[in-house]
Length: 241
Image 1 (spheres, helix red, strand yellow):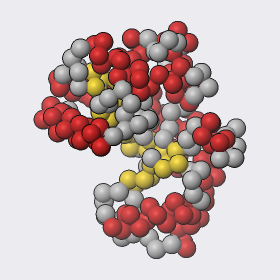
Image 2 (cartoon, rainbow, N blue to C red):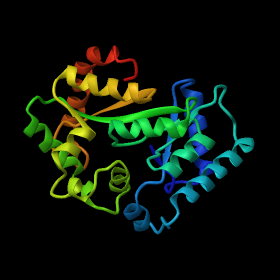
Image 3 (cartoon, rainbow, N blue to C red):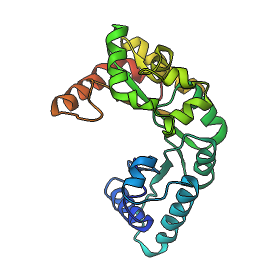
Image 4 (tube, rainbow, N blue to C red):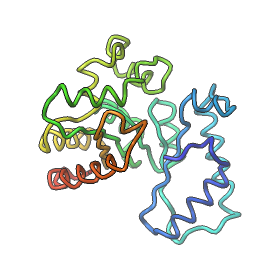
């Protein structure tokens, strides 16, 4: 997912077109507005993120006549969580890729996008049968969700996960709703739930250690690849992973 604050819309479009030409039919561009703290750190104004994204898409579209277009157009999706960003994804792009969402959000996102837009749901997974060990990995990676100003906290509040679920390292109920844990069959069931709720594809994100998001190591990358390989037989039959 590319941060729209990192480069002008024309540069984003040109880079995407180049990749789409190199990998025809295989490249998907995801763009997102990032987070308030990161944006303000570089001098950006995060007060109206939906308006900023709308203008950014205008800049991308305006660049098309001035750039060399790939033989096969690339797919463009938004990192959309809330209703307004999902509406923008429906009206101006090919669909949405929501990050860190429970199945309830997938159902709402499909309703917002309508039947014809692409919905790629993110699903973090921990291939660990011990509930306490699995939840410890989740909390170590996603404990910052407790910040009520984060876009994820606001999205979860809309889904009924209020302050009590976000406090003290996240409630067990919220941890289990966000991250699929257990054996291969349990993780495949969660993927199937997203497909049944309206997802076209489910992006599997293995959490392999307690610091994989903030301080990943080469060993984490290797374990993640092995986890995906291990899960593949169970996930192939779900139809969307």
